[in-house]
Image (cartoon, rainbow, N blue to C red; front, side, top):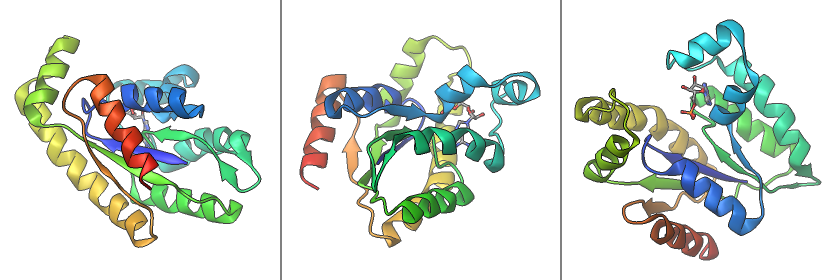
Length: 180
Ligand code: AMP
């Protein structure tokens, strides 16, 4: 299992998909799964940008992960999960109980200027520089304890420079994975 972490706009989805094609693993994005499968009040909450509850996530994530467990191997790329400390503990419990080794957490970084440019290209009016700066702060706040949690358990967390073209970044990720 390989996890992706990075601030919105760092290129997680693009790079997660490229790596999944390269390795031949499925790309599991909790945001994508939720957009495809949830309805009603939960969908409204999601559309308003709120996080769903941990329990709601486990219901969605557990069957998808189980589907790909093969003995003590789980060859997937996971994007968008875990996003809370409780989710990190749940995932740790899941891998431990199946004897699965977490291969690494790819920390995708890009500088604010590059991210601002990408997000502005995306054309959404709410992607202002101020909002983007806030996302950086929020990302650090939420992600730091999760990274610490897995680092303490010996999971490598290579930091990847996400600036540059998609294929340049993909090359760096492949290199980091091969070096593990
Ligand atoms: P994303 O595509 O990763 O930005 O996720 C889109 C939305 O799905 C988020 O704003 C949340 O509402 C929901 N979501 C995705 N992953 C999680 C998660 N791990 N925990 C809680 N909510 C999530």
